[in-house]
Length: 62
Image 1 (cartoon, rainbow, N blue to C red):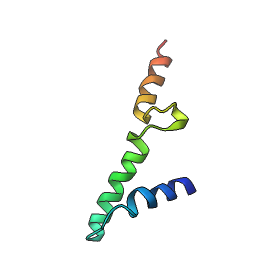
Image 2: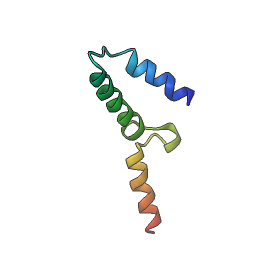
Image 3: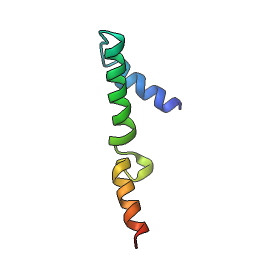
């Protein structure tokens, strides 16, 4: 959890100006989606979660 919080602060909160609460929500949600779904993860062999899921489904069908 500390890693997530640190990355949120470093990669999102410190990098953006938020003009309103809605603007903050929108930018933070876009960052969260990228962080959780689109960026490569070291624990997944540097694949994105969607790439890992596709590969896992392929392995199950063998």
